Image (cartoon, rainbow, N blue to C red):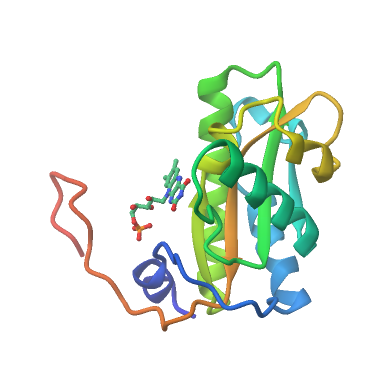
Length: 172
Ligand SMILES: Cc1cc2nc3c(=O)[nH]c(=O)nc-3n(C[C@H](O)[C@H](O)[C@H](O)COP(=O)(O)O)c2cc1C
């Protein structure tokens, strides 16, 4: 897919089918995440947990519904890429680094023809002591920061207009 098409098609999908994306596509998405820019070369302080087990996603969703709000924070996506980082990294830099990783994966998912959405709420609102964290098998000393939920979009992705983000430069 051409770059211009990838950025035009990248958009938050909030209705997924249950079909798991192909293993090769999952590999390319996680590889893109691992090539994201990271502050102060601290790449080794981050991990991407690829979650394909329905039991894990179901338990996380159930915890969110019980403790936060009775709604599916993953919109039925069968696949999550959870970014975790070393707990000692400053929270602002941790969030910025994780956002770079997640956005790389959202764009890679789009290039695969898949739907995707940035997920913060299900991490942030459950906090560092949440039960689901134990199921992610994260490296010791790391905490979940954000995630990408990915899957086949229930309805086709359509190219979008440029957003309201301002600029002093004419678009190409
Ligand atoms: C840091 C960040 C956190 C987000 N967290 C969530 C989230 O928890 N749940 C959700 O549905 N969307 C979340 N989003 C997606 C935004 O709501 C979405 O990107 C925004 O509405 C613009 O829509 P678009 O992605 O279609 O361009 C998040 C986006 C960012 C950048």
